[in-house]
Amino acid sequence: MQDWDARTEALAAPAVARNRESILAALRDVLPASGTVLEVASGTGEHVVHFAAALPALTWQPSDPEPAYRRSIAAHARAAGLANLRPPLDLDAASAPWPIRRTDAILCINMIHIAPWAATLGLMEQAGRILAPGGPLFLYGAFRENGRHTTDSNAAFDADLQMRDPRWGVRDLEAVVRVAEDRGLRLDRRMTLPANNLGLVFRRTG
Image 1: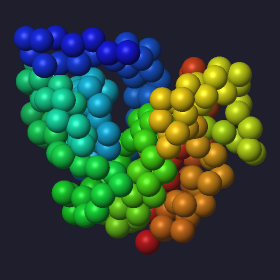
Image 2 (image 1 turned 135 degrees about the horizontal axis):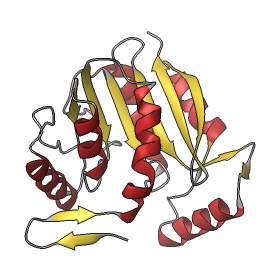
Image 3 (image 1 turned 60 degrees about the vertical axis):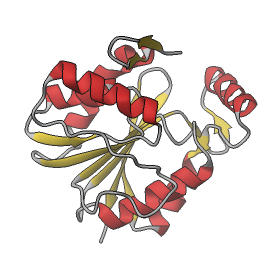
């Protein structure tokens, strides 16, 4: 559920206020001291604006394939007035080539379960191409482990997602890791974060 400010085109997702601090704490231990961070599927733009304000030594590049979300990102960015936040890119994770050739880190929050599996494949393929060697890809969201949901609430969430679109759903952690490894990314860290979510850190090996 999202709220919309018709005056600014800024969208608001209530979940952002609940999870942004825990994600930021994880990112502080993962991201490089400087460089560019590409956020894939920035949605409303609230996350990237919050992180850009907290980590000013990094340049933040938001993106989203949906025009309404790009307008929301731009609206939040205008309100924040941050010099280290670039205009949003039109980027569909499942479509190549991406409109960016190199980045030092990639951030992707709550995308792979609310998108077709092709988006995960595209994310890993392009991360293996455009990440700097050793650069991190940080994923946040709910995952199945060992073929099972970790909580009843995640199982209910998965069922709701698949009712909305049968191509969506909570992904198997092991399948995501295999796809990453096949594209030159290794799982470096697994973090347990609030609300039954994981933070996964992959790094480009080449």
